[in-house]
Every structure is written in structure tokens, then in C-alpha cells.
Length: 247
Image 1 (cartoon, rainbow, N blue to C red):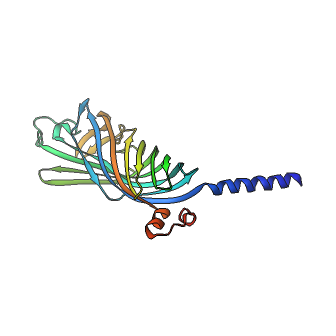
Image 2 (image 1 turned 45 degrees about the vertical axis):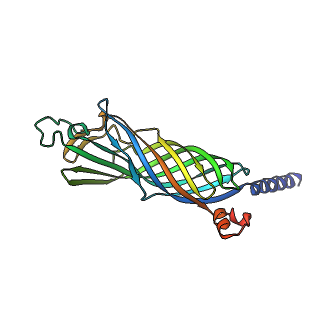
Image 3 (image 1 turned 120 degrees about the horizontal axis):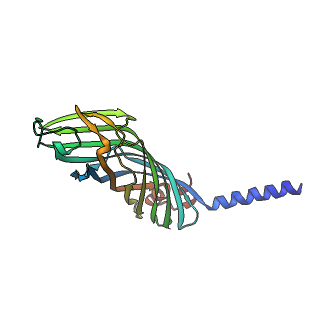
């Protein structure tokens, strides 16, 4: 009987302690400005800044241990990639000599993949004011790849699901700041190459060997607008924080 009573009291204490913590959902979209460090045969490949707004969506489950320390996890859907613009013989094709009809032509290749990411992050700041710093780690699955070649005013495309031109899973680290009105600024750096060095085949009718890409690391700056129920309640003039922070 004493054991049962002790167990009931222990479970009750844990339950009351958990209620002191706040678990809630937040979501938002991202506008991404990305760049890349790309090297081919030990030479730097010219890259362009990439701007994307579609399709980006992120959903977080937040656990606030106190008013100033918390965590979040969840998932995010993103469109990430890189843009190379260089001479045809320097863009990544094999066996391009001076007799090739496209030799010395300026070409552009856009490569992108939709990814499904799973982050874990630490938050530090004033959650009451919706103002905090955060940083963490994310693992992303690249599930739909597309590449485009632009040459002589023409566009050539290739699409594939779960292909092997890019690494299937890519880790990253990120850090950012959440501002009171919902505005969010984040920097992310991918810890592995975007292109899969084991891929050998053809791109746009030309032989390629991705192992000759010494590096294809992506970074980006994201501007987003993150919303949770507490912020919505504040906008509408309802300051019932308990209902606002509920799931």
C-alpha cells in the first residue's frame, strides 16, 4: 500500500512539474538566399547567389523549460541548391577539348533538391517577449532533384526522385535570432557536399564524374516569419497566456 501511494505521489509530482514547462507549436515559411563553395579539379567554379521562396515550410514543437531556456524540434520542407556559371569546359563535363562545338561558351547550370529536414535547437532569450537566440543541428533528406542547363538561349532540364546525383542525407548547423514581431533571421551551413562524389554517368548528353568535384558545400541566409498562438493572441489583444501557449 505504501509503495502504491508513493508511486501515485511520484507520478503526480512529475505531472505537475511537466505542466510548468510549456509545449507549443510554431510555424512559418522561409525566403532563402544561398551560395556555395564549389571546386572542380582543384579549381574554384564560379557560383551565383540563389534566391528562392517556394516551397519552404517549417513546423516546430517548442519545449520551454523556463521563460528563458528552451528547445525545439520538428521538420522543415525546403528547396536548396546551387548555381554554377562558367565556360563549358570548366562546368564539370569530361573530355571537352577545343574541337567541341560548345568550347569556350558561357553556360549556367542550376541544381536543386527538395529536402525534408529534422532540426534540434537550443533557445536562449525572453520567450515572454518572443525575442531569443537559437542554434542547433539539422539532418536533411534530399528526395527530389532537378537540374537545368542554360546555353545559347536554350534550357535543358532533368528531374528525378531520390536520385544519386546528390547525397541523400546532408547534415548542417545553424544559428539565428527571433525578433518580437515574428521576424526571424537564420544562417545555415551544410557540413557535407551537396553533390554525390560516387556518381558517374551523363548530364545533358555529356559524360560526368562527380568525384572530380572536390567540394560543393552550400550555405544560406534565411528570412522568415515565425508565428505561434501566443503571438496571434497578442496581435488580437487576448493576453490569456495559458491558452495561447497550449498545443
